[in-house]
Length: 257
Length: 325
Image (cartoon, rainbow over all chains, first blue to last red):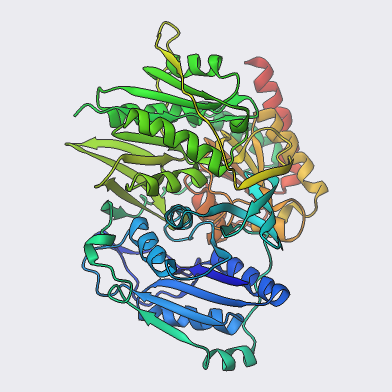
């Protein structure tokens, strides 16, 4: 089975966000594999071990993302691909990323393309369904279980807390939801092996694309931090007094009752 | 400049979700005096279509098919594409729900258009429509506009104002012939886990428990409080990891991001990942034994105390308030 994972490098979820003139300050921040993409990588490895084949992890970014690709290889993926967009003049958007990935997949054979259902930084979740549409293939989002049976997959997906079981034809784009699995940590031998695994870097020229082919269709006007919240009010006293006062405040001050 | 804008409503389990009206509200801002066309898919849509009109749509298109009763990617993509082909709108709004998140990017790619997802605010600035959306799970915000294609956004439930209901409004309700074929995914089974009936993402009140709840049994008082308030129960990752409750209840950076009017955090310390999922709630109440718990930094009202004392008392007190009202 040919399994691909589309991955994004993101800020560590512990990081505090700082913004200067509408630009997110990345100085000194820790980066990780997007946690939802980690589920996708883990699932790809498990499915390959069961059905045979190869796992290729693809990311769009700059050379910094090689670190996260190596982590994926250390977990057990077979090869990594970096689509390098460092030379792009304009800021890419979801359309840009989907076009780049679609161009990469044009001459590939794939049974399953996995990804996270959303990236924890941008939180849009657009790229995977856009890619599926561009490739003209099936999609199932927010999956929590997947079994491959020949030319189709039996999938459990999260639908706002409900569990939907579906039968989906391959080839398929599927996006991971929390609960799909528990991603492994790279082992020391895994890390050693990863150093020798193939990691290919390609750019727009390699994909026969011009910058205007992938030009963003949205514009970021501004980025900012939410206003600091004023210190809240601590309600003193025993439980009865506290509850009485709280109910009064919710009713008369906050007006939410 | 006046535009024609489509607002997709969402019917789930036979009910028209409130976010459908919020989509009309967003569409009105984008339309700038132009026409807002509601769109509904499923069966038995007449009454829902009338509700869309009373809540601000100028007319409504309904695509009736048994294959559209439950959301399936291919079926909805085909149905909405048909409507878009016929109407060629300049704007499109879809709810940022489980279905909308799956559908909208696919439609955007089909339209060769930009899309701004998970929008919490819509405003007009000159000829441009500016969408505000949270990033880094609400730790920051960005404002975006669509520069090419359809002015297209998905809106997060509970954030964009719905137009006021006006029962005297009237408008055309037109059936659209939607023929669905070649579905590549079929639904075999659905297990309902959201027992309370109030969906976390649309809940006006959420009572959430953390490790301090101590057991699955410990969630009972929280459920009773949520019942009295007509709200939903949520949880921190800690409570889910400890198996006190299902992961479907998890609120946080991984998990659901919620913005209710009232968020009551009980026994939740307030790790940064949890705060990311709820800190934009309108009013936050924190109940925790530890006065140093970080949750108090985002709380509007804090109670240092034992949740097992405070929550039942609060439930009783609110019952009284509700019967008085």
